Length: 421
Image (cartoon, rainbow, N blue to C red; front, top):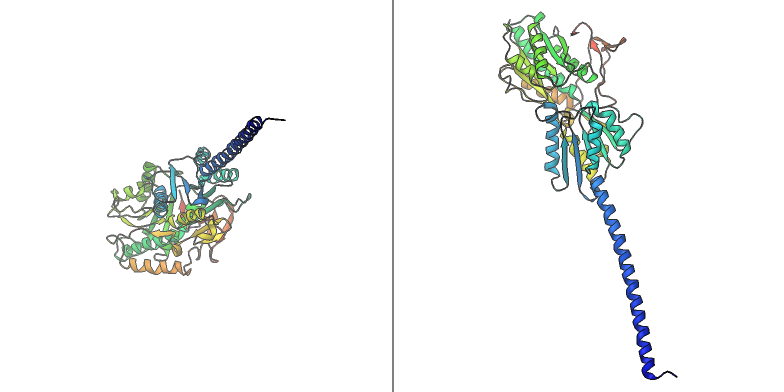
C-alpha cells in the first residue's frame, strides 16, 4: 500500500500534468483563434483596398480625363468632381488621371482599380470600348462612361453605365440668340439677308458634332430664315492654332457668326482679333469666352455633369442602383437629361453685344424645353447621311433626338443650307 505522503505527491503531479495539458490546449485554441481573426482582417483589408469599402460608408472614386483644366470640356468634369468632394467630404476620396489618350486608357483603368477605386468615371467617347472591357473584368467596380452609347449593347453589364446631357438643346437656344443678332444687323442695314452666314468649327463628322451644329442653325433660322452655315472640321478636339486658323478662314469667307464644337479658345481669339471690314460675333461651347472676346462674344452653352455624377456617387455609397437614383430619362444602364434637370446650362449672356430682347427670349425657350414643347429637328428640310448617301431624312416629320439613348444620334447634313468644307 502507498504511503499517504507518496499518494499526495502522486496526486499533485497528476494535477500539475492536467493543468499543463489544459494550458497547452488553451494556447493552441488561442493561437488558432488569433490566426483566424488575422486572416479575416487581411481579407477585409484586401476588400477595402480593392473595392473602396463603400459598404461601410467609404468610397474611393477615380476620374479619367482626356484633357486637363486648360480645356473647357475637361474643366466641366472637374467641377463635378469638386462638387462630389464637397458633398461627401467624410465618405469619399478622389483620384484623377489627366491627358489620358485612348490608346493608354486601359492601363490607367487597371491602375485605378488596383488603387482601390470602387467607382470610376471615364469622360471621353473614345474610352468607351476599353472601359466596358475593364468593367467586365472587374464586376465589383462601377464604371460610368460619359458621352458613349454602348451600355445597352451586348454584353449587358450591371456595373457599366453611360450618361450624357442633351446639349443640342443649348445649341439650339444659342442659335436663336445668334439669329436674333443677325436679324438686328439686317434690320439696321449692316448686312443683307444674303449675308446671314454662320461659320462652325467642328472636331469630327460624328453624330455629336453634326447634331449640335444642325440644332444651332435651326435655332438661327427661326429668326432669319435665310441663314446658312459653313462647317470646317479640325479632325481634333484640342488644336488651338488650327481651330483659330479655320475660324479665320470662315470669317474671311464672309461668316458673320462663328461657333465651335472643339475645346480651345482659338475661334474666340480669331473673332476678337479679326481685321475684316465685316463685323463678326462669336458663340462659345462649354465655357464663356467673354474675357477673350469681350466685344464679339454673344453667349454659350455647357454640360453640367454634377447632377449625374453626384447622384452616382451617392448611389454607390448606399449600395443602390445608379439609374434608380439619378433624375433623368433612363434607358437600361443609360441616363440623359437637358434643361429640365439642369444637365445643360447656358453661359453668361453678353448684353453689350446681344440683340435687344434676347434675355426674354431665352427665358421663354428654357421654359419650353422644360415643358417639352420645343421642336428642334423639324421643318421643311431634307438631309443626307455623310457616311451613306442613300440614307436620307425628311424633317417635315420631327426627328426626336436622344429618344432612345443619351448620346446624340442625328447624323444628317441638311441639304442646301449647310456646306461642309
